[in-house]
Image 1 (cartoon, rainbow, N blue to C red):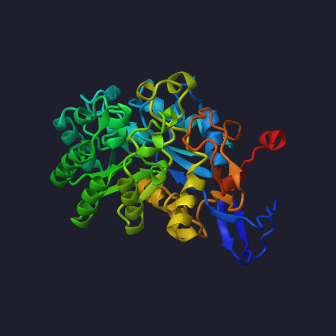
Image 2 (cartoon, rainbow, N blue to C red):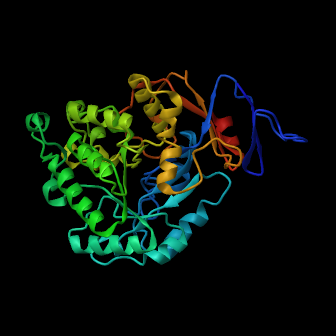
Image 3 (cartoon, rainbow, N blue to C red):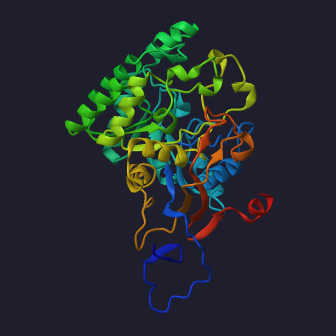
Amino acid sequence: MTDLHIADGRIVAIGTAPAGFEPAERIDARGLVVAPGLVDLSARLREPGYEYRATLESEMLAALAGGVTSLSCPPDTDPPLDEPGLIEMLKYRTRGAMFARLYPLGALTVGLDGEIITEMAELYEAGCIGFSQGSRPILDVQVLLRALQYAKTFGYTIWLQPEDPHLARGGVAHSGPVASRLGLSGVPVIAETVALHTIFELVRTTGARVHLCRLSSAAGLELVRQAKHQGLPVTCDVAVHHLHLIDVDIGFFDSNLRVNPPFRSQRDRDAIRAALLDGTIDAICSDHTPVDDDAKILPFAEAEPGVTALELLLPLTLKWAEEAGVPLARALAMVSSRPAAILGVDAGRLAVGAPADLCLIDTAANWIVSTDQLRSQGKHTPFLGHELAVRNRMSIVDGKVVYPQAQDAVAR
């Protein structure tokens, strides 16, 4: 046990206080784990355009409740984040004292239509940290080639979700015995592997840096492993729910398990866990996608994919770590320092001089996931009713306690 000393938004000492240091406030963290604030690589905040599903305020509160102090949002809003003014608006609105740090991804193509490359330099100057299509495909490979050439010239990172839209078209579940038995159209593994082969060939040609979003299959991860061994400049992440669930868990058409990419076989889930241990997967993200009741409480094949996960990123990551025998520090790195390195931001570390973005973790909380326990406006998750052992108790951003907020503490 040791002390952490904070001043002017930064960690100024660990252990002995600097000479003359007199704190204005003391926080008793006995019995809690003081960790770097979590860094989430994919959290849809639903603004602009989808405020009926979630608001910037509701999802930022959910992030802070989950210990997430830095996050990246995909560009698939309405309108998409393809103009500097939209990026500047989001950055401006999150400069308040009660928000996590926001790092938007700019749209790779105008309107996310996959036809015309955006003005990446202007978007970058407005505050983007990379460029993505979200879950929208680029059908013309030549457009993707030119985008990667552009990105290489300026040193930008392109974020791609590897899924061939033609092979995945109409699919709602993993192609296999479960989908066949339930009468659901399938998304085959080759939808992921064919897309990966294309991406890797383009990376070899251009030398551009690519981050691969939400890997889901054993075959896909093996391709990523080979690409890394060949020295290709690629990184990848996995959604935290894919560490735990498989296609069998769909059960009787539970639409809370409708996600993209779909939950695959147990073999694929085990391969994901192995890839986390051997370093093939660089980070774990929430893939937070709040969906309203009208779009979710439908037959499985008609329901919109997406689950709320900002508040479950920490407990589900540490649940995997306990089951896999992974040390706490290494597990926390998968949701803090390693995603921060992918973003290229100064976050996710406990060190003198580092930003004072912290979370205080209770590893013996034992709470039941329920709709009234979730701050997110989206309430749909496969883990409703599950008991989890870990919970964030406090979040600090820039040296200030931002969760629980005063009114939240009183309310609860």
